[in-house]
Length: 247
Image (cartoon, rainbow, N blue to C red; front, side, top):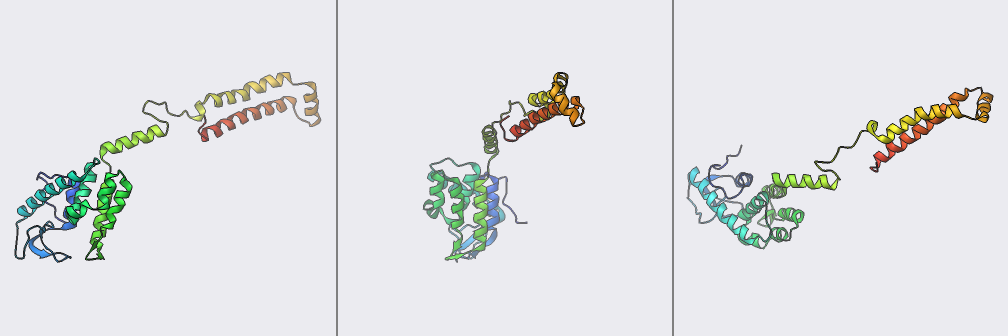
């Protein structure tokens, strides 16, 4: 597991952003040249680093915290649209990697300031090269930064849920949909099966009786079947309305 810097320091961005940067940069306590041939030390520090330099872990962690504060201030000065904690951490991570000069000219900054959040997240992926070549590590880092940028805070997630509920015609105070068995229409349809059978059975005409007897059927049964069918139709229509959201 990649070691992380001291969490107790006064980090200017959320810990998720610090973790992303630390895991992407790694930490080496003696100076080395990175893939672009730049002398680097600690958690990816390149400012005033020269061959032969060395730090303790405490010095490396303190320098990262100090430099992230500088980059956070630099990014904040360029934003014209408010950024959430996660968005800001992702932007700082990119700026720390490509430099504030590159960040200032980036489509990532431009799209964020235009409020085009999804397009901004996609633009992170453009910064995946070093020395003119696509670098696997940068592809992975850009993907993590884009995911962090799109991550919702707890308050945002709550607002989004509330919006979806309102859009769906629901609210915390709304009555839940009634089950079909509690529907008045269903109940009336069922009642018609019983009452209709009795009413019609007592009032059937001699013609119906004659037709029923010619078919060797009980007239009462014929009328009752007609009433049952009528009630079933009512129930079927109610079910279709519920499925279509109109009842």
